[in-house]
Image 1 (cartoon, rainbow, N blue to C red):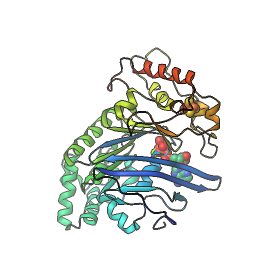
Image 2: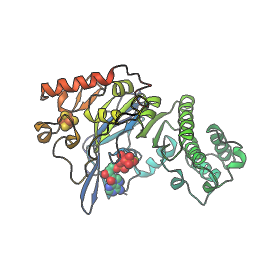
Image 3: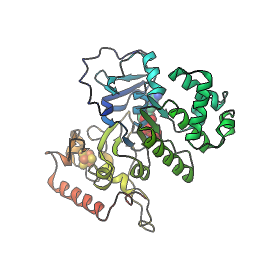
Length: 368
Ligand SMILES: Nc1ncnc2c1ncn2[C@@H]1O[C@H](COP(=O)(O)OP(=O)(O)OP(=O)(O)O)[C@@H](O)[C@H]1O
Ligand code: SF4
Ligand SMILES: [Mg+2]
């Protein structure tokens, strides 16, 4: 891994003190044999202290690569990060700090919970050893204190008899318990930011609900901010304050959870919301977004959603739509229909569609 980004231009100003994480123009590319994968292509967003942000989008949209770039967990090369990209965390720019300094930030001030706990836990160490090692490393505590903290962290995530559980190996636990262990590990140093990448996808629905409740309760107790990556808009409705919708490496919409789920502005977000099964739609045809996410080697020339968009017209094939304001400063959507270039007839049809989706909607019954 390289220590820092080469040839960096001067940094922008730090964000205000209430902002814990600010990602600016993040670009992460992979140079592979077949060409270049623009996995994350100019992504910007911020997370306030103690707040929860949801990152949503179909498979391959760049959610995990965004998280891994922020955590500095990608190998450079083959990954390459844009020279203009900046990630500000707790008052400092962290893409450019030496890796040994970043290792101290990681685990202590920001921690990540991965989708599949079995692949993230080390099979040859007991879970107690793994949590205690993390605590010893970051908090410079004695062995006894680290063990006590490990037991406390396991108790906090609802693992019964943590004193005896710390002696177990990962394979001796169920999927739900292992995910709790991962959360306990992430929380053991009381991080300011938790990044959870599809933390419940591998679990059944009941355990999923328990884990999400747990994350919420811990967040309230410790005041950590949470960046939650998920496919599940129901989870977004329950958990987050602010939503970022990604498509093919770019942000296509962002705003508060109410704005995005009840008043979507980008045709892609509308398609995502309409493809959620619900009791009301039972018996009717479920709307799905036609087509598939484009290959990163063969992206559409202008709007990346154009081949799948019911509103597309000539301009969408010729000019890339900017991410433009559709309300307050943080309310953004990427679609020509919201710019002065927009086609008024299609704009009116889109507005009708938005209005129809909004009728009778509440934040709780939008997703099933
Ligand atoms: N190490 C890598 N080398 C090359 N391409 C990669 C690598 N990691 C990710 N990609 C590509 O980057 C793009 C974004 O991937 P990413 O894993 O971020 O998607 P995602 O939104 O997290 O999807 P999912 O919902 O399936 O987890 C994809 O096209 C993926 O194939
Ligand atoms: S710019 Fe055109 S193709 Fe892209 S989302 Fe808007 S209407 Fe659809
Ligand atoms: Mg992913």
